[in-house]
Length: 188
Image (cartoon, rainbow, N blue to C red):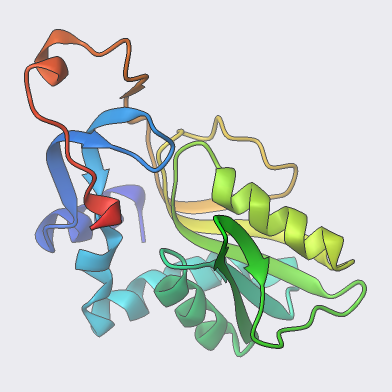
């Protein structure tokens, strides 16, 4: 699946929104990837999962881990496509943690899967959790890399969509964004 083909699936499903959005990072943007809109369709989940799995198979992961909520659907599908175990981290008191009895064995080769990355904060938190449990992160896979490859995580990084989407601090908005009320679609 090419960058363009994946982007077209986002457009066809209404998952690529245009307007004024506040991202989880606190930055503002004209575009928002509402992955849940695309990932509610199982045939599309399978297509995305197959494409990502094909690109990461050679990394040799034995487990896939995803940060909840965004990475859950695609993380589980990538794990299914690869025939691997799937676990996730979730928020507890505002911080991602490994719960539910999930264990990471020392040296266990783990692939982190996320839906969208802008600054990489949740992915980095997930990597830190894996390492704190003495696991080995073999790579990060994502549907959308909004940073166009500028986020450096210190491991191989694979995405289906890689593009630069402008993002602005709240105190430095261009006039067109400042004139439109902002929404936070990811937190609804």
